[in-house]
Amino acid sequence: MPHPHDAVVPLPHGLPASMLPLQCLSLRRASVRRSAMSAEFNRLGLPFAFVDAVEPDFSEGFPESYDRDRRLALFGYDMRPGEAGCYLSHRGIWQDFLASTREYCCVLEDDVALDDRLPQVLASLLAQSQDWDLVRLYGVFERRSLRHLPLREQRWLVEYLDQPRGTQGYVLTRHAARRLLETTQQMYCAIDDAIDMEWVHGLRMFGVEPHVIRELPCTSTIGNRKRPRQSIATMLAREVRRWPQDMRRLQWMGRRMLRWTFMALRRGSPGAVSLATGKEAS
View 1: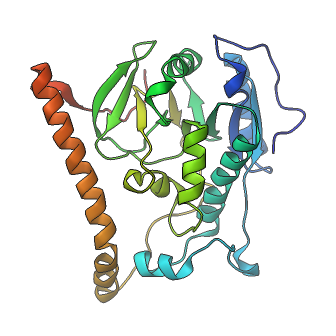
View 2 (view 1 turned 90 degrees about the vertical axis):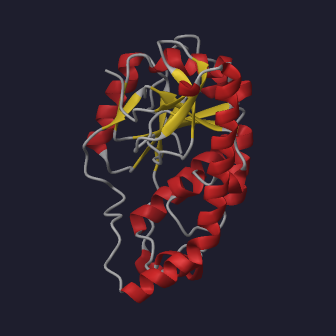
């Protein structure tokens, strides 16, 4: 929940009160990160509030929402406490958002640096909010993308062929928060994987390119997400069980690629589909 000492400054850069304060997800004990993020927000004159991240203790049992059978069937090993904490923390932000009167919610994790142009780009996004449900401000991986709409500060709202993963920063509407809460009630995968399942929730998901935040080289508070060693038989069984979901993902991507191709042909520009850099702005 937001703390009384969080910064309160005049509304900047045309950003409406309907999306403020920006929400910064952080462990309560992460004093160094909180100090750095406070400096970033204050440098840009952005009202913000820290939200205490959840730290589950698996020694006292798994969270009630954890679908362990499904997790083990699809992955072959349990979620790590930090991974589950991240999942529950983002869901908590969505719940608090819907309990508020805000129309939009900007969520940032505490291991990012903010581009000087972030406020202007956020204002530009809100001016075109009828076109999106959720917009990523950063993506972990490079992904093929299609430019959808121009934004301020030489940025573009882009549609990804395949989502670039990551929850370092994003903006969502009330509709998106409601839909994500509906589709993430049972926890069995990382929260960014759950967000990326467009074929499940059907939200209009986009990104900002070039990115307006960048991830800092900090030690992850989630912990190592590297898969443990598994036998060939376990891996084969896992892939067979994941096949239906993988097919749905590929079908979704195939329909999107077909739509892009028709759009490019209508525009007379085969190069309309371009490769997103996946890198922060210089």
